[in-house]
Image 1 (cartoon, rainbow, N blue to C red):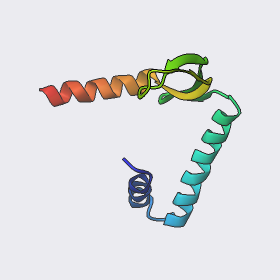
Image 2: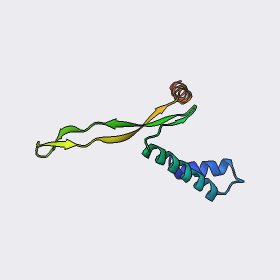
Image 3: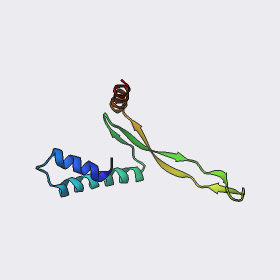
Image 4: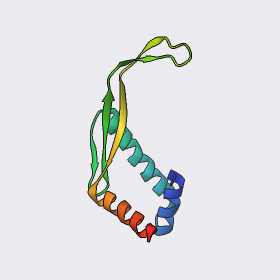
Length: 99
C-alpha cells in the first residue's frame, strides 16, 4: 500500500474530512516519526510495533570490481519490530488463506 492509497482509503472511510486534511495529517505523522528516528529515539505504537535504529559498526569490505579492501563506515539503519497483535493478525490471515 502506498501513501496515496492510504489517503484514498481514509478519505472514503471519513468523507466528512477533506482529503487535504488527511494528506496533511499523514505527512505530519510521517515527518514526526522520521524526526524521532533521526534523533535516535525509539517509537512504540501499541498493538502495531516499534521502530528503532540499529547501528552497524564500521567494517572492512572489498571493492567487488577490483577486490581491493575498502573501509565501510558506520551506518544507522531503521528497524521495525512488529507488535504481538500485528503478528497474530498477519499469522491468522495467512492461516485463513491456506484453508
